[in-house]
Picture 1: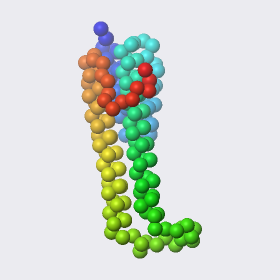
Picture 2 (picture 1 turned 90 degrees about the horizontal axis):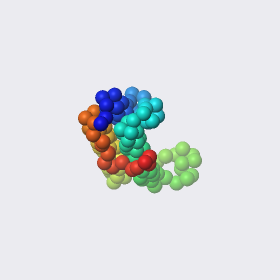
Picture 3 (picture 1 turned 90 degrees about the vertical axis):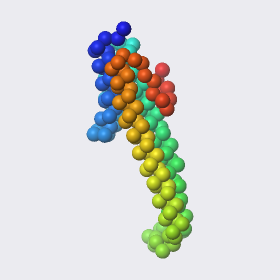
Picture 4 (picture 1 turned 180 degrees about the horizontal axis):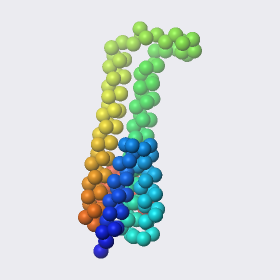
Amino acid sequence: MTTTQEKNTATLIHLSTLTQFFFPFGNYLFPILIWSLKKDQSEFVDYNGKQTLNFQLSMLLYTIVLAFIAIPTLLYTVLKNVTFEQFENGDFPFEQFSTGNVTGILVIGLTALFVLCVLKTVEFFLVIYAAVKSNNGEKYTYPLAINFLK
């Protein structure tokens, strides 16, 4: 049976990931801080802390993979008609952009932005859902999470 204090601590761990919208890397620092202080006192808090950190690390991995796909593709699309000599001289030919190139850039950029927005929206709602579940004393496992910490 989990106590009210354990439920509140687990809920706080989940909700502390939302600090990423106010502090850089707050979604890692605050949950790690709370979890490391309380993990030895409660198995319930330890479980929820690991789930939270696994989910945040998974979201970081997904974001990095998205960036590794979108950024090189975007750079290739922009720079495919530029020679090294033009690049060194700073003679960047804007007139070589055609509607096809601009449309490709726009599609790649908007797709990457859309996927990132979807990931952040899903993350927000899953964090709230996990906080509610842990406040009810239930163990919640995030979907899409890779188990880095077991």
